[in-house]
Length: 264
Ligand code: KIV
Image (cartoon, rainbow, N blue to C red; front, top):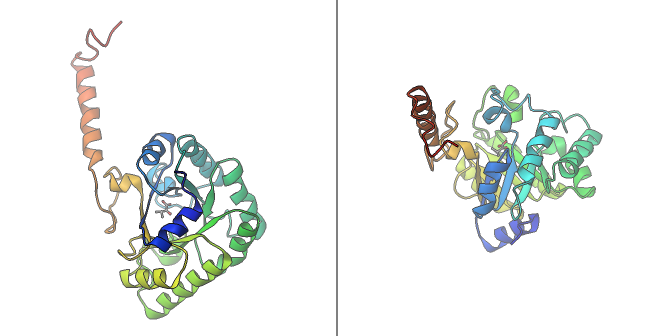
């Protein structure tokens, strides 16, 4: 059955957990679509995982449109959410509307995600009233890495935790259909999830959020630059991939590839 933003709300109401993963291109997106994932995020983590940047800051709108279109071609049943990259919505309501519109019209996304709380409320409201579903993202919001001084856990101090709760309530009031909570104490993840009617999706926010999201290449053990504590490895593909590549290279150099069956 086709998943929509309403499905996520219903799942929270029924106490069913929501599973989400990221995709940047058609091949992986097709795997996720076949595997009963509830939503796929075309994350701006593409900038780090796919393009090799140190942060998500350099990611552009054109790149996000390209990734979203590629993912769209393989996704039939799963809800498709795309990230608004840094400086595509921070600048003005007009920019937010135009760029969110591009992700829906050119990329084929069904919803967009923006990082931040009270400081972006006018942009969230404008998109929601234009018919563009918006997902929020609070806590360790990677686009603010330079402000945080690194990918550090947020909401550890009581005033920070209070601000995050108020941000979550403000986003809910502005009409977001869900909020990603990243790298915050598990207790805070639980408290925010309990006060909101909309679903929360955790990534390093403990077990009590309404759902979980991970970067696909992290949980498959493909991204080797660093492994955040909140990632569980469901496979160790980097090793297997490198072994296969080395075997191929050896076969070519030994003149054992191609053989007769692989020739015309
Ligand atoms: O960009 C991304 O992949 C994300 C998820 C990690 C939540 O925002």
